[in-house]
Image (cartoon, rainbow, N blue to C red):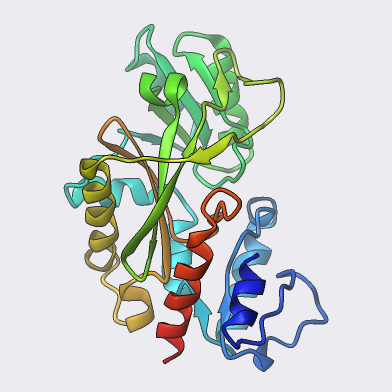
Length: 272
């Protein structure tokens, strides 16, 4: 749908796979990252690819933003900038995982890697459930960083809103239903993301705008492409930013068909 909308606007749009060795990246005026959701399993390879491609083509979002956003430690940056985010402990050792879990007593927590996609290795637990510590230890034991967050009832019971911004302009939102069940299981038994049309209130939209506006100050970007994301998705629930995606958002075009045209207008403006 996205490529079709670009072609109707007069662009020669091609959909290619990032690790396809046969792609001539230098032949593109613009390379737009969409959903390379295997990046977390090929992390070093993906970053090396990004370096190679950005040396011969313009990439959006800007590689500077992608490298920053690929690791969810960026949440600390938003917290320091005064944007309300889920308080998160980033743990690199089993001891740090245990200490973070103790901070939550008998409450519920979410444990996941700081670099991940599609809720891989992500679980909802009681903080004193041995399975929570077990998942955190597996993540840190693999040389990754584990995140320990308080589970927000608004998310685990009602879901969250994903707000889309193209060139900083609000373009609509989806609602994502709950994914995780207590004990480390998925709703429905397997990972399923239930996406419907969202209706965020004015305060959520204002918070989304605030998060997008904070990015330039947080990153200190000098490249004009990195000062303002071509696209951003801000996930919000209970007046709190859950995630900020300026790297690999799905666009939910089947739910928000108008977002394809908004995206095309944003691309057109950037190419100008």
